[in-house]
Image (cartoon, rainbow, N blue to C red; front, top):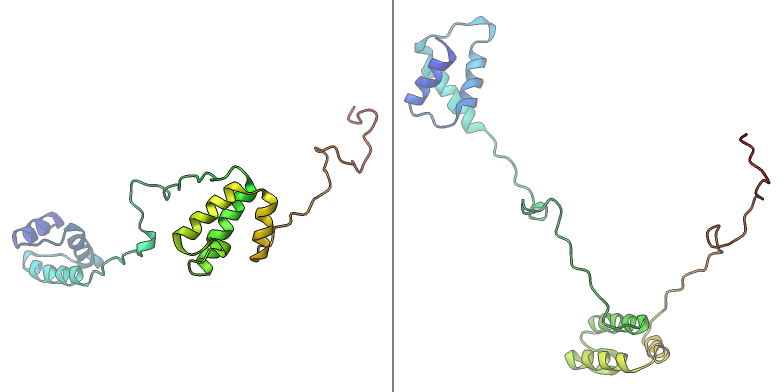
Length: 170
């Protein structure tokens, strides 16, 4: 008897776990040159049933790693545009917003809740950067100091080694 007759016979018996399991059991049975007869088919089908039941399901990935198949990478967040043209006012808006989160809805000198944030926004739009910075420092703002570096070659700075008067590759 051969493999195809075994698979046809298993199908007639109501086998529904797929052909790969039957192929695996058949390969295990004919190892060492053994001859399989039709009377051995029920025993092989019983072994295939055990193999199919022992098949461990694949672990499901975490919810974090599940990305819809329409995306190759996570979707790009839209770029945020500044509300204020002046960078100091924009920095002030961010500072007072974060201050309100820390102080549970109290936006410094501007009040509490949405009215306080609205008052802060209006005040930031009306005052000069110097006034804004003064009030922010009163509430604990520490400006970021960016150290100045000396100009490099492209900026017109000093060159360590003098240039040769003529090329030396010739």
